Length: 420
Ligand SMILES: *Cc1c(COP(=O)(O)O)cnc(C)c1O
Ligand SMILES: [Zn+2]
Image 1: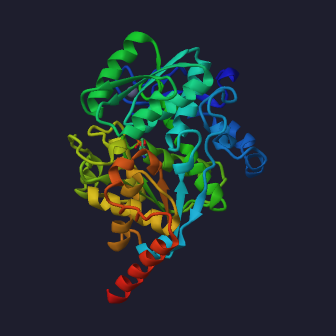
Image 2: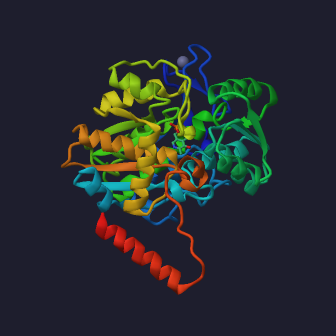
Image 3: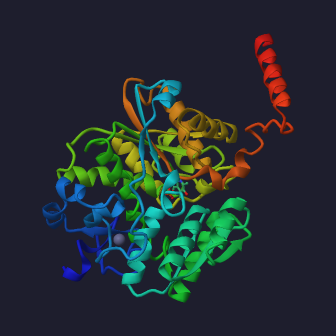
């Protein structure tokens, strides 16, 4: 191993275990298995302790030995350490003893968990000498690549399906990124990007940089354990697009256990999808190890991946941990968004509505027992998906600037309330 690689040892095929150099590459040449970063855990154990973590700034890089860069990050050094909120009012409504919300709606700088993966991917891209970065995105990734590339002085190309929410499109354009809208769904965007990545020699964060990129998601799990007082939650509910975040939350729990940072305990990881794009949850419910690709049709556009790259591994994690899966309709997604907002004051995007709606179903059916404790991973901000709820939240009552008018409005409402 080369000291210049930090705590990384190699890229390793998840299927056959063959090792590759730590470059911008993502598939095994022998069996097309996905490559994953392998670490030097004994060396990490000597360096990463509760004490060393607690002595560092409150951002995701406080766990830097377990993140795949050779040197300190050059992009996104402030990302992470979002609040873990004890959600007592939501717990009551969902009928569970103890509930926590990991609130990545306020992640820095672009208000979604994607800032975690982008910080890692772009820092590693700079280390490998790239000056142009790119991604295939369902929206949040494009926002984060555009913003973080701007801040780091990198050139960026972001590829999105043309029918994305206005909020997500503006949030990429404003940073001066090259935004390319593809007339097609995400899986077609992704296929095109695989061709482009091979041809132009850019750092494609979720194509040739995917092994590094995906590791950034672990930081959400590391933070949850630290914020719970160095414990693994009994239940974690995670929404799934490609399924990568869910697998990395599991990996984070395993790594902290292996390093002795938390006690070894049993835990379940549950996956959440929208009914209009539910290849993984449908397979899980049917007890299958493989999913069938679908054509997405849901308001949860950030999760609309019909051929999820990590679907197979997400199913495996749920099976191994005894977790399960559910999916929710567009109406249930909107209900979930409103429930979280009205009980906890957190305005999540559609993906958050999926997580809340699915948690409700898992608790009601006993797959998450009412006496247990659960963490909901809320991954994106509602201000970016206003279109999804704007016709479902009522309208302001309009009056002239007159005390009399306000008093008669209140009186009319009181009368209504009494009569009702
Ligand atoms: C991308 C995304 C996810 C899930 O991503 P995976 O591909 O499953 O890792 C979840 N929530 C939001 C808001 C996202 O943008
Ligand atoms: Zn292989």
